[in-house]
Image 1 (cartoon, rainbow, N blue to C red):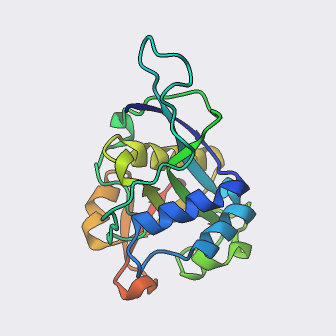
Image 2: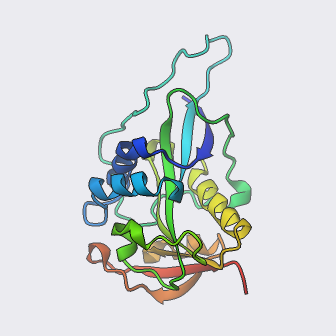
Length: 220
């Protein structure tokens, strides 16, 4: 099966999909609870950018044939204990993402992955951003990236790179000052390819592991 993709904010009623992807993409120690993810999707749907997978219909096949249900769950050994920014496993840059575009809003929308964020005037990342949607400041100068997640069956197609770069471009368009994320040490070099610079060890203690804070400055 091959897919094209469209990109949009999530809808409040898609909280179950969002929560499921969180559990698939992160280890039990670092995954946020389904209740937390559903609450964030309900309260801040515009703070998610989702990649929607649309099955391509082979030539000669009637429209609608072979379409997938909204939730195609690939169960199995898929936990990925790599950290909060976990899905850019292919290391592709924006210019090489190669994602096929599609028209949005098909009848059966399956979320293949998403990036979620929060705006704030605070300069550094803290774990409270994960749990407390009220910390979101719509006009905040800085973008805190809370998670970048792609289901295993949709990886290695440039989706994570596309999601990240669309978010960077939108932050530039909105006049934000910088984007901030936390990651494990083995992801630092990858995020440097996207213009992020290492700030040092983060104050985050999520999962009892060591996180590194990185930032992408958009304005001097």
